Length: 533
Image 1 (cartoon, rainbow, N blue to C red):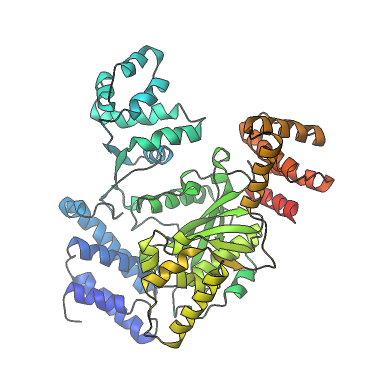
Image 2: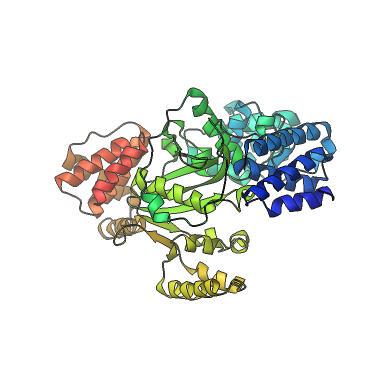
């Protein structure tokens, strides 16, 4: 094909999701042509890179995959030799570029332990937040240095730290607060520390951040008409046995996929590697689910994250806040994998959460489809969920959405305007696979609050202590010494008294919840389902 690199790339993009013989042949020829061209300017190079990732996720043939892999390697070698070009691709995640952003203490420490080259890009020199913190953590002999320092910058100077020493110093000072995780975050985040991560290795880049797969799935088509409820109820295969390599790779790939986007989610940053379950499904899709370490877990709810992979590459991420049969659910498909089988991704995720955790009532918060989120509005995320069975929780909005959807179905030229999409963000979207509406965590929370105010005059400390004593006396349960079990005991004791769950069966499940929540999220969820049934 004649034309510029940009023309050929546009032609390739135009047929990226067509898999008939003619389109597959054309896309292969375009790839072969582009392979012979000099690599383009940074913006076009980034667009080409994203196109290569899409084709690797949705290859029509082995030759398509091989050419894309060769081109990703060519881009890496080019950027290694052209640091000026690489510098223009900051925060792209491409090989030999840099990521500059704020990250949690836990994640920065992980990067350093994984031998990434991390530098402290900047900190609030004229602020005094760091001074206040170090008054708590410095050795006693040095605390007076904090007392005489008015700004962060002055304290660093008084400690005689060289610029290259500041990062390691801060990481290990905060390590002193490791047993007070919430306090550590509360003190660390306001410091506004910005970090520079050097992506020196190919595997430390979005181009090669992937899991090994036994074989690629090659596409002869894309699924257009999906029976979502049929897919959700299709029996889930057993979780894969994980080798030591995979147990290490799943957290690494999951963390990096978000670092490249300058994002974090708590289940990824604070992942409990013992909680990982990995499922190999159809059409090149696999999913890893996981939760957080015991010190990070939520009271009663379970925040379960996931990474969805397509032919080994991370394709989507998100999680669900699960309470019994109910879950607040979120999903994000990476930009370079959009235009493929996103509905199928959603179906497989709902299938997994439904069968693994017994969730029947899925909710999506308005932010996911546009509330204070222009990307959600621009992408038409509301209609993505709507077409896949999710409906507005509020009746008036459900009626409005149905009327608008009828117009979209009637005329292909009709466009739903932004004003209407903003209106539709007025309530959660819901997919109910069961009958009735399951109990929500906020309903129990409100009863606990009312109980404390009525019986303990709003004194939370006195209420918690009294409820724990009452629970131990009633059940004969031995008070645990480990902090993670004591935390669950406090939560369970409050709902035990507020909900008047005094039957032998209820008490049994409450006791089991205390024992299982910190160690085995899956068995904890089983007990919670039985308690709420």
